[in-house]
Length: 277
Image (cartoon, rainbow, N blue to C red; front, side):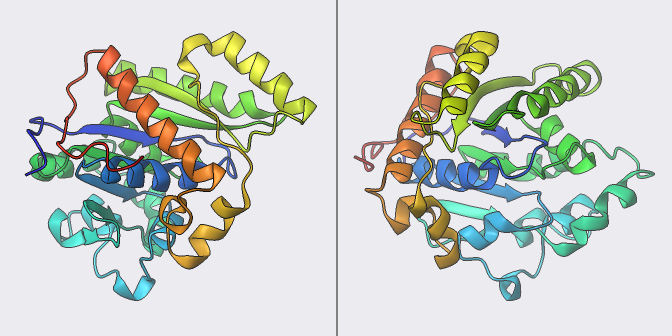
């Protein structure tokens, strides 16, 4: 028994329309950290590239049903969920078919809320659901934002970093207005962080100056182990828990949970939450 569970899971969408910002790495390692703290976690891979599945050791041959089948109501949602090597962490994998899903959804009924509807059937099975969004603002991302409570935004410390966030912010406002008024940006995490680099310091100053306390205190450094881990089908926290990248994601996961507490959100307090030191 992992402790009392909330009636509904907390759902995070990890999103940024820019690619290469550490979005999937952030999704996989936050999900792993949450599960290591004793929470039941489902990771949903909405990106047609399927990198989140690869990073958790899910091979294409293992995928019988995927997010695609769920969005188009071709299968039961439980049939699309696969257990991973990480205890308490499951994944709903992506599929190459998602590449054309945006066009297929364009004329579909209730196209923006299909994921939300499907998740209602498994709400009591998980404490946290974390959605890895594609690096674009399409119907797949909209489905994630409509289903989510909050958004986590990975932001690479580079010159054009704020451009992607400004577009995402506009999309969030539209989703709030038309589909999900309770949606909010939970926080922004600075990735590929190197304080020795002048541009990193400038970007951090601008981002913290503009978004204030929405920016997490924890930053994610440039780290070779974070890049190596997916090639072994492992999260960095499993591949090398002591590396700087893994330790930063553990700190980030704790910061997210602490922010949840401070905002009086309903979260689970499992008995073995100190499993990750």
